[in-house]
Structure formats: C-alpha cells, structure tokens
Image (cartoon, rainbow, N blue to C red):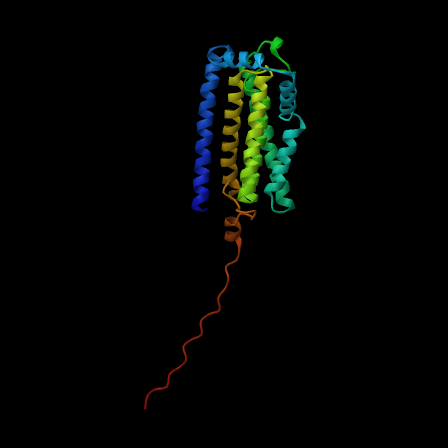
Length: 253
C-alpha cells in the first residue's frame, strides 16, 4: 500500500473515532437530561418559529423532502456507478454503498428508540414528522448520501469537478439538517447528533472497507483514472531477455 493511502486510512479512522466520541458525549447529555432541550436548543427554536415567512417555509419544505424517501437512495446508487470502473465493479460499489446507507439508518433507528427523545411542541411544526427526535433521521440520511457521493467523485472524477461536487453535496446535506430545525420538528442538538453520527459511521465504514478492498480508498484514482496500486501488484512483471555472454577473445601473439 502506498504511503498516501496509509495516511488517508489513518486519518479516516481517527476522524471516525473522534466523531463517535463526540456523538457519545452529546448522547449522554441528552440522556441525563431525559430529553429536555440542551442549552441553545430553545433559543434556536424560538428564532426559527419567529422568522418563517410563507416563501421561506415552502423552500424549506422542498429542501427537507430531498433528505428522505427515494432521493438519498438514488444519490447513493449514482455514487456507486461513478465509483466503479466496469460493470462488475459498479454493481459491487452500488451494493456496498447502499449497504452502508441502510446500516447507518438502522443504527440511527436503534439510537432513536433507545433515547426516545420528544420532539418540540407540535404546535410549532410546519411540516409533518413522526417518531422520536434524537438524532434527526433526515439529517443523518442526507449526510450519509452526501458523504458517499463525495467518496465516489473523489476517486473517479477530475479534481476540479470532484471539489465542486463535494461542496454542493455538503451544502445540500447541511441545508436539509437546517430545515429540520427551521420547520420546528427537531431541536438543533438532534441535527448536530445526526451530522456526528453520519460522519462517524462513514469514516469507520470507509476504514473497514479499505482494509478489505484497498483500491476503494479515498486516495484512489486521480483526474478520472482508476486506482493503480492493486492492478500494478497483480500485473505480470516484464521479462527482459538474458544478456548475451561476452564474446571469446583471442590470445595475443
């Protein structure tokens, strides 16, 4: 494995552990307060309720709708198609990406049921919502989908296109999370928890997957080319013809 991939794998693991630790701390705070809003939750909620003109509400509902349903799955499927080099690898990448998304959603559901945190007062809602509040499902799902898309384009697209796509994907996921607070259906700490959980899950899954398939590293191909390390390791070494023996010399005299 190249030094660049070792560095990326190590950084990915450290990011996952850090975000998991931060999420655990946030979850403990939510648990010990029995779901009561954390400091800052009430102020953000009050501001959102007081600044919701009809046009902003309609825009927020449109954005928040993309964080659930079929849209995240379409984004993740597209990420798998981008990440693969041929039909077989594209299929494998799509299945792996969907598995990461679905498993992350299951983890989020388990955490949500464990804490059973109540949502804000339904009188303040301007969007439909169901289930418990912590962590936010829309936020977690959109962040997972955005992260998987970033992984795919970082591996297979030109650097400038990859950067642009990553910025747009992160902005979309951030907007989905923000609309959950703006529409009154989540506390700000629910959204923060969704972002931390998604980042931790993506980082740890990425670290595990690259141990299984090193060519799927974030430090994969550059400028739209496929990763080379694994292929170079499997490629046969060129054989050089044996050197000709030195010509016999005649004795002097």
